[in-house]
Length: 84
Image (tube, rainbow, N blue to C red; front, side):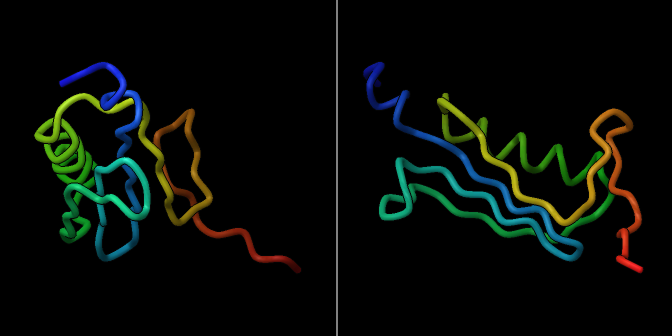
């Protein structure tokens, strides 16, 4: 695979409370692979995401969307903050 095609290929991950959707492609009109699986434990879910992305070769970047708020320092999802 040439270097330019690797630079253009990206992965996207949408992590929800019940399911995770992963995709690899060069853009929204060129998805090479898509997978959906249930959200389980953090360890199991993240392992499935990593396995999916690795199975499709080198990517230039990974974008992640998740429910939140996220606490990156603690690698945790915190209870929602509700405005008073």
